[in-house]
Length: 177
Image 1: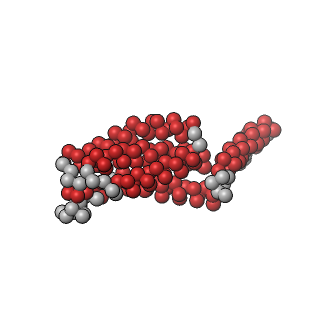
Image 2: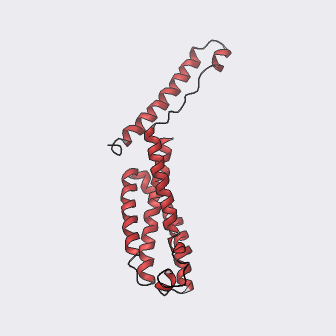
Image 3: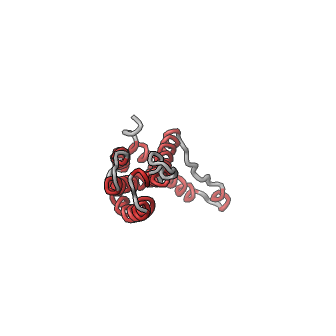
């Protein structure tokens, strides 16, 4: 199971890096001339198919997070209530502005700090999975909104889940490369 092997994979990559640096250091000690020091090979980082697969999944996750952050903007171009979020929910310009900009910027800015701490203390992959499930569920809840409050609350919670997903993804990328 690829998800279950993540910790083993990360540990193996770390031990490979440590082993390479120890080999380089010992080869420098054994060398007797400056010419030998110049010929020491730098370790090449091997990119495995597992790493590429995970980066693609994390990239898709990040793209979806960006799309969801701007969902309110994308859902407002029409002049009819069935094509315009603002007309359908009877939002004022201020309410629409709060939904489309202030909520995203404020929540993302504040909760990115807390998400980083959470990801450092908890399992990154499980944080990513739980936050992704919450994010999907809250997106569904937003589709049933009937007014400003019923879209604002799930949107705030969705942004919190998205920041946890992003923090997990950034941290996982640093594990792989």
